[in-house]
Length: 141
Image (cartoon, rainbow, N blue to C red):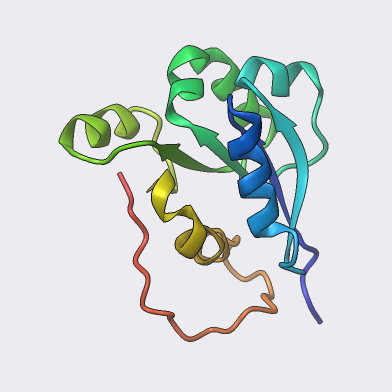
């Protein structure tokens, strides 16, 4: 028995970046983009369907911590993946405030996002993806 596709919402201020992320996920049968917003407040206002994972730009998290808290209250199993343009200690410290499941530098999304999303699948959920590690490590805060 295969699990339902993991439901992913994307919060990104750049329409081009949103299209790039959605494009990465469109051929993954075990992942389904269920929402897109330019801010966390916009996502909350849209009253999204059930969410499993939120892929959000760091700036969106910083701008709307109350909206992020609302999402976590309404979707208790929600996994947050934070994206940022740069890495480094100052980014790690800022990201850690939001307790994400993982974080990625945007230049790494193309080759790491799907494996990171699959790695945060809820424990015990069947997964149609391979179980062997592909060698990627999750950048976590």
